[in-house]
Image (cartoon, rainbow, N blue to C red; front, side, top):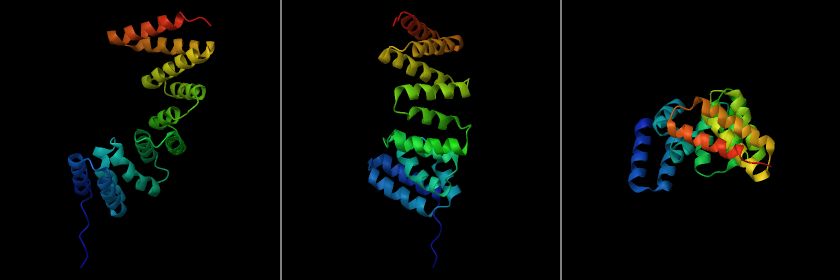
Length: 197
């Protein structure tokens, strides 16, 4: 007698509910791996969608998704994000982000993870500049570039990084609408303009 196929969404919801009650990650992982090993891939993706931003849930499931769909940029980014948030390290996360960029050069999240995982401060600043140049309306990338450039300028007394930080903060100031945001940007700009190397 054949067993009935599992309802993937219900099985994942039950595993998550149990995890929330017990906080036992090993049981959650075992259950997710069991579900992921037999579920239809599209049903699995759909079932885990409500939990896609919870790394301990998305990670184990998306390992199977990426194994079966190695060129799916969204899946690669989801797995990379789960790896980053669970401390798997910059190397593993960066490799997945680079694969996602190869699959879809317009995937903004892949660009963010690619820049974020660069360990060298100068190279990280350069990566954030590439992201900001590619996505001119990406204020998060612009803010991260400004912070990275200011940090590098302070640490290495780098005039070019200082000018990049000032330009980036100035661009953010031009689009800022909230008074506290404008005040913070003006303070940062005043501080940076007062530096002399």
